[in-house]
Amino acid sequence: MNKYTNIGDVITTLRKEKGLTQEGLGEKTGLSRTTIVKIENSQRALSLDEAIKIAKVFDLGVDTMYSYIKDQEDNDYKESFVIAFRANGMNSENLNEIKRIELLVDALFTQSEIRGE
Image (cartoon, rainbow, N blue to C red; front, side, top):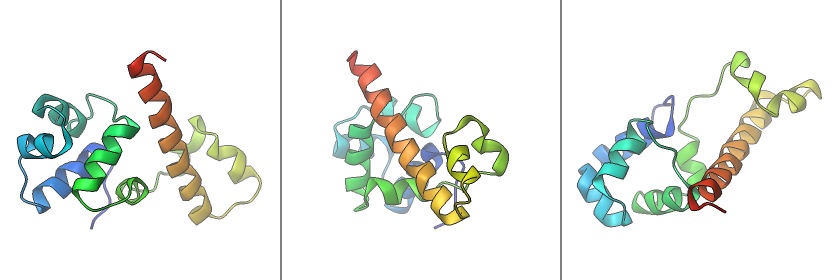
């Protein structure tokens, strides 16, 4: 599978490869078609619960689903805590793994914000 710029593009590609419509994916995950559209168009953040449900439809783990996102350029790490690891001499493979973990942590915080916790 190719690399994509965001999780919405990944989900769109996986959905189409599986022959699902947005409505079909919504039915399999318990999410509305509108929610799927907004996630795919990067108009809405994907919560961890939603990521788990969507990944299950594609028989993937959430980490695998996020691994299809393009590795970020050096400049993209400026706003990230990954820069601290880079300063300690970590290689790019480890930095990319740390970035994926950071994305999952962000998803957890987003989920808490959505729920008002």
